[in-house]
Amino acid sequence: MKRQIITFVVILISIVSCKQNETSKVQITEQNPTVESRAGNGIEDSAIVNSKQFVQNDSLQMQLYSDLEKLTDNHNFEVEKKPVNNRHVDNVVDTIITQKADNIELTSYKTASEEWVYKAVITNPDIKFSESIQVGMEKDVLGKILKKELNSDLIEVGNLERTSGFIFFFENDILREIEYDGYLD
Image (cartoon, rainbow, N blue to C red; front, side):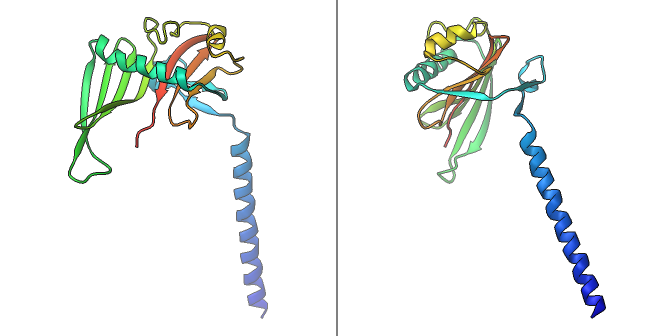
């Protein structure tokens, strides 16, 4: 009997000890700010610590996407193609196309009949979106275009469903990078 009680107490202590460790891990995680690594995109600094401000503007998002698609026609890109299996139709192979040139990287998904840009990173100050949005512009200019007060260095302009959006990265109130994160089914 005494042995069973000791075994029970040891099990109880180890369970309580494990639960305390899990609780402290959660608390530590919740205290950390959001950190997004930017090192892989040719940006000199290694991290941005900030929260993202979302601005719903379907018409501007569609205009920006239209301008993004036009980039593929106007530049001499280095093109890399990778075949992938279609997720919805067996025995159909589609293509992931990555295009790079002049501080622009576009990634698109191509089927037999259509092609969609679903990811882009632009740090080229010569590229203009919607005739006035470009790397190097001041944050208050984007705020005037959006008719919003911008309180963050990460601004996402997207559609109502938040399925795709353009993310503007500011440093010292100057736009230094534009990313597009699109929806791909």
